[in-house]
Length: 134
Image 1 (cartoon, rainbow, N blue to C red):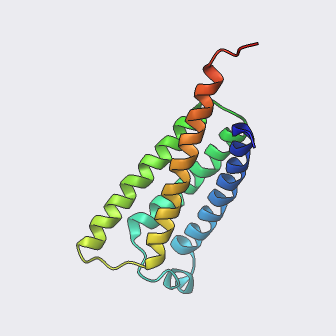
Image 2 (image 1 turned 60 degrees about the vertical axis):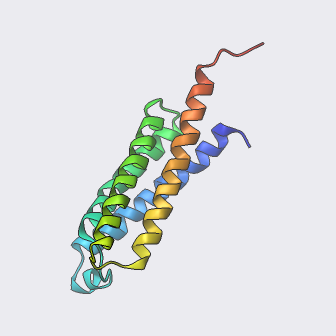
């Protein structure tokens, strides 16, 4: 499978993942009392970051699908922002803050996904800049 084809698949995953993130985060943040209670010991700043980042996931996924030059940078920024939030979450946990174990899994999944997408997108953009031998 070519790098471009892999990026198309990752673009679709990013768009779907982003839409689901916005939906679930919005439900947790703005839903009724039962919806808010269902998140348990959610960490507020992580919940807000994920909700807001969901929109960026969709936008970045569209950029990847359309092979936009800025998409590799956007994926890199998402990876960096997720790493920073993960570090802040770790600080929260080490300080004895309440949390849900599923938050750990979700942050790791998001971080691994965006680091992988960023690396592949940056690689593809470098390949696009190379002169082709004929």
